[in-house]
Structure formats: C-alpha cells, structure tokens
Amino acid sequence: QVQLLESGGGLVQPGGSLRLSCVPSGSSFSINSAAWYRQAPGKQREFVAGSRGSSTTKYGESVKGRFTISRDNAKNMVFLQMNSLKPEDTGVYYCAGSGRGLIWSQLHYEYEYDYWGQGTQVTVSS
Image (cartoon, rainbow, N blue to C red; front, side):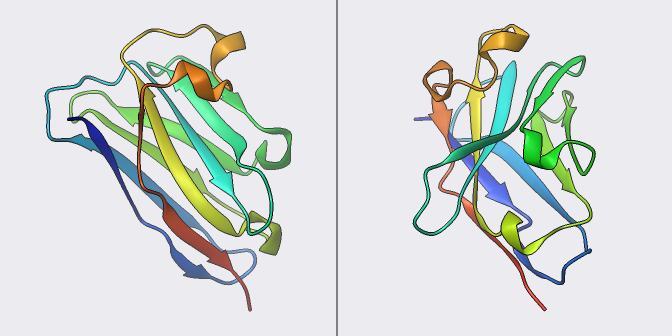
C-alpha cells in the first residue's frame, strides 16, 4: 500500500524558512504529479502548490513568490521550500501524489491525487 511520508515541519519565527519533504514508502510508486495542501485549525484544507514533473507548477495566491515546489525525480521526492513565513501559514501540511501527468488546470483539485500523506505540522509564531 502506497503512503506518502512528509517531513521537515516545525516551529519557526515569522520571516523564517522551512523546507518540507515528501517521499513514497511501501511500494515502487513513481510520482508524476504532486501537490502540497495545508489545513489550519477550524478551516478547510487549501491548495498550496502543485507540479507535474519539474516543468509545470502552480501556486495558491497566498503563497506566490514565497513558496517553491520542486522535485528530485531520481530520488522520487517532492519538496516545498517556504520562505518569508507568516503566522497565517500555520497549519498541517499534506503531500499528495499521482502517477498521472496532470495538466496545469488540474493540479489544484484534490480528487486528482491518489495518494496522501499523514501531514506535518508547521507553526509560525514568535
């Protein structure tokens, strides 16, 4: 059974940076398209960033210019570099993956992704 494992979350001060990582475990699943979502307490889960391979990326409006999604295809890993973090970035961050090559307009839809991680907590606070 495929499971995605996230790591890299933690507590950081406003203006700081964190780098999240995501890797499949338990199978030979190869990530083609991937995304990061987050859920703050009392709020719905929201799209943060998505990518198809290394060339097509998409970002939520609130993180554009601050977050970057990237891939290491050789290691089958997905990363989320988060800079200039704000308290409103606080939440549980989830990695999602698909073996299909999604087009740009599909990247933010949760139902396009077959596999999900358990989430990693990111807290931005002074």
